[in-house]
Image (cartoon, rainbow, N blue to C red; front, side):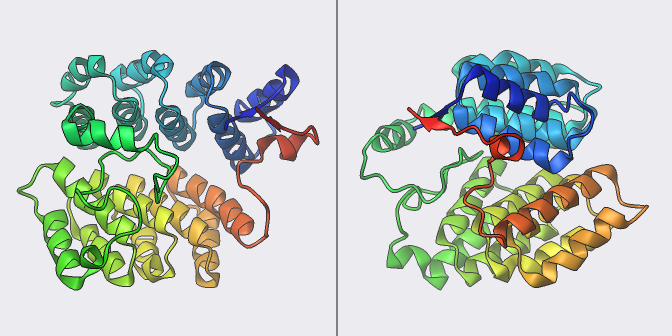
Length: 334
């Protein structure tokens, strides 16, 4: 059930997210954003949508992601406007397209098709995947999966709406013994790294490996960091942030430290490291917050990641505690 809040509480969250005082640290704005995301209502969509006037590409990219995860068609107009804005940062535009795929309305397909030849590779690749995601949702497998999710006994390993579903057999529930064998992992690794396959199929292998989650599966995923697609590599880093496996830390640190790597990939690696929160992570995050030559999106991601690191090591009950940061008013659950 989604929490319910009073108009006064909503105003607290809005002022925090939009930084109306000019004094709200970025990591607190992120916490307010994820609190709003958990509300999943028209008010949260309205407030989140206002944030696209901000100057931070990192924040706007996260706004788009959250709108997609709310999965309400009411967010489509603002997401479409972001995608159509050629002056917007490609990282934000790509996330808007991905969010449109997550909301999964057939009417979005013609809009997404317009950008299959976009000048920015990450935007056109995201549109390709988003179209395939919407089309898959309308297949028999997609419809059966959606129906199964309504069952109270349905076990979903991750609650996120992913850009692509895991390969068949690894869509939900604990993987069966045959699905986690080295043979299966090698098969998925080959599919993940096969650049002759559509990106959607490669993503399906990626999320299947995530659902397996073993050290061998992490190694298979890490092999994808050799790809030439920034979008593809950034999604691997995101998956590592979901897995929270210490086994992925060396590869993520290598990505973060690689100054020739895309900022989009490095930012996602930083946030994954903040979530994993092992001791060796901390110096690297602090380094890129302090370095004068750090790209803005990398520095900001490390700021947020440091807050995540502190949360993971603090014993706090939940990360999305935007109201607790500014007020002691309780949130009731409907």
